[in-house]
Image 1 (cartoon, one colour):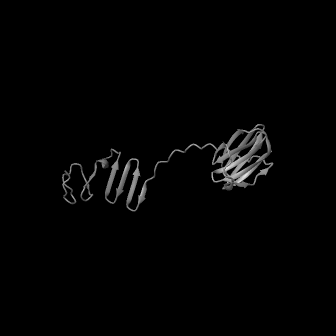
Image 2: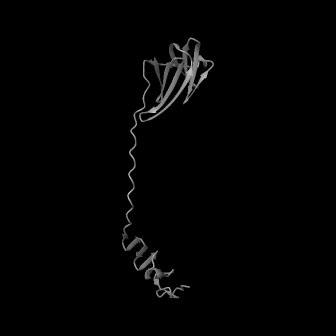
Image 3: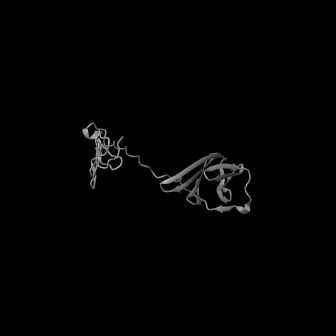
Length: 183
């Protein structure tokens, strides 16, 4: 016969005696997000229902067998046997339900395979006010200024004055607009 004890804070412990083995399984979490930890202990067949106690150190499970009392401590997801029971004034007995079946995690559906990515479309020219920008080749125009990169067109040879931004020819030594030296 199997037993279940609600520990609070979305934690449950499931106890089962399978011949000489005691199986302790803890469940933590809520629907869709469940963690499970399970351990088996050689205790022998049970002679009485298990008892569960809450202590400051965790949960203590007392198993009654033909060989005597067996103590199992549960702290978080780890479980171990104990030699002696903690001070009785600090232990609170918890309600244990009998005749239960082990809770099952919700069935998960397999993920659908990813669809192949579609090729990217070329970027369309962007316009904002009197500014226009293309990406292939890189071109940018704003008012009377123009900049080209990655092109061998005649406009790629065009330069701009670093002082006023007016277009200048590669052969110019001075800006025709402001007179700034281009050398």
